[in-house]
Length: 245
Image 1 (cartoon, one colour):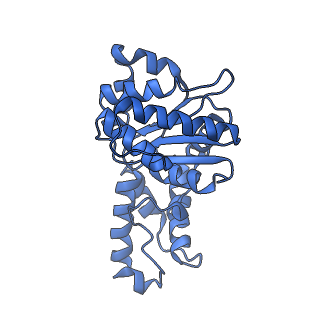
Image 2 (cartoon, helix red, strand yellow):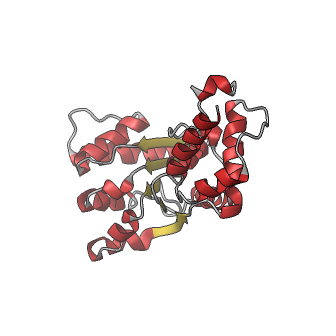
Image 3 (cartoon, helix red, strand yellow):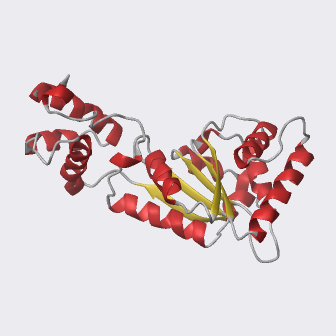
């Protein structure tokens, strides 16, 4: 394989969302700033969308890895194909709250008691749902109801919805207008700009252990630009590296 030929410590173009390989392009810096703003200002709901492979999950994992554990508690739901009841149980389980054998109202009561205790302790609970475009209308309505858990001064839980562009279309449905109106921070993650392609590829090579060596020529970067997607770009770069080895 080309990894041994170039003396890489690991595959530079793996498609797994590894935060170490995150390339902070202009759009990635902007979405990171939006997420931080939403969390620190307790805006309630944050929505992040982007096409497949634009780095949504990677930026999300990077953010969560850098949050101060003394200030924040995180429930991360990465499989949103759940019923409203199953979602509540998963949220409680992620926060370490009782979830076995309880009814829907009992789950909400236990969660509310937990959120109030965290608020008194000066901590902010954050619910993160990845692949949120797969949420049903019923589940999204349940999530909206969670935003009713609040004190006179603060929202008790911050919700981050991350998904493909279909999520925006879903939230624009008339039946979800109440939830849509509560989303205070929105950001659509765009593909890399033309002048960022070379730096993106070089960054991944550097993290993998290239030592700064230049492996691709400019014609390769032009071909990578034509793929339009970091996922397809990574696949094409991997093939190009194999061809060069």
